[in-house]
Image (tube, rainbow, N blue to C red; front, side):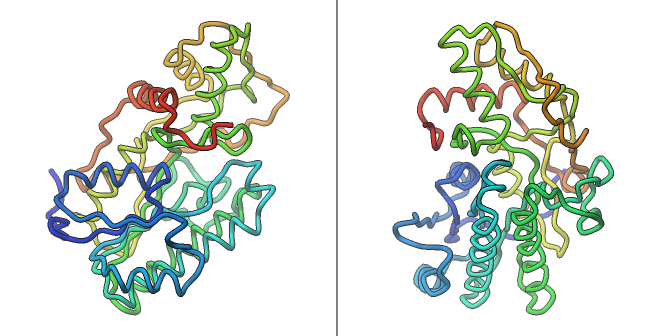
Length: 319
């Protein structure tokens, strides 16, 4: 049973910040059935790192609600190569959007964090209370610090001004609109591309880093979008909420599912000389579940949708 309706999106102007990204575009798709007016702006129209531009845009369009899904994102290589941009741009974006939302009377804002906000050695499954209880993963610490600051910014505006600003913390995502760059992509997109290319060239084997034993949780981006809309309507509190499936698989199992979806039938070899990373990263989603939300897409069905989008050229940075 769902929680009571606290914020009605019908007839409202809703600003989706970052609408061309994987998460933002999924939120736009989900909002299509909400009888609301969707407001968007691309980078040529609005530079989110410039405070004046953001203030001017929000003042002009006067949205009632904001989904803040914009940010600089990337994998380990990108985080290691551009740490200054990762912390600076993400801090600028969240500060500019949250301040402008408050100044212009936005009724509700939802901010999206990232699973890297949790300590490197957090107990599993990771509960919301684990935030700031230990050292972050060094490889993406600048990005994580910026995302934590965003969560705390929303909490602080709620405490000081009574602003109805909430935050959610999604697990590892995949789906339409993902980034398939050779160096900057995350695991699901990287494996989809690798197995697809190996299938086309009939490669005898595909090498996956590590032993394949670490366990990871993966959520379809359209399920995340559904959860975000659900929480926009049904949740209002200072604490952020984890969003995930509450279930994980080994990297080995995940690789075989991706290969099967793509249609790659040759050998998968695990390079055990490569690092595994944390043995497990799983979210505790009991608070979200208690509110009445559950994911709809199975892992296999979600990956099939992602692969179909990849084949149709819907991804980003495919070069």
